[in-house]
Length: 91
Image (cartoon, rainbow, N blue to C red; front, top):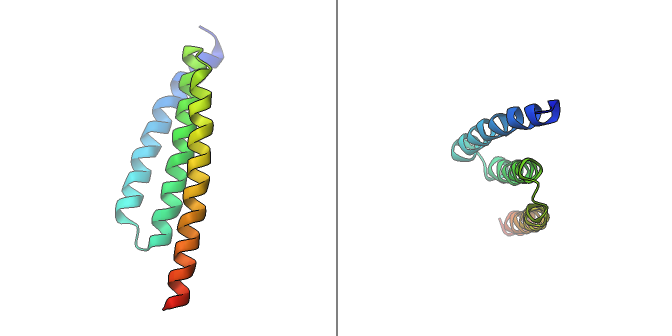
């Protein structure tokens, strides 16, 4: 086992613990903006988890899933921002 694999096996649980903390931020977020940022961070961390898992298992197919998730995350952030901007204009 090389040093890289030890780092991967260390990074995966740390990333999962951080994801739990982000879920708490989503639940307790005082504003909608905090929740949107937390959801964007959660998607980014999910991409990182998928990438680490792909490297550990040597399955490049999972990288395609990570790229699709990145695209969905970007589009959802843009859509939320557009919705909030329109909602602010109507108030």
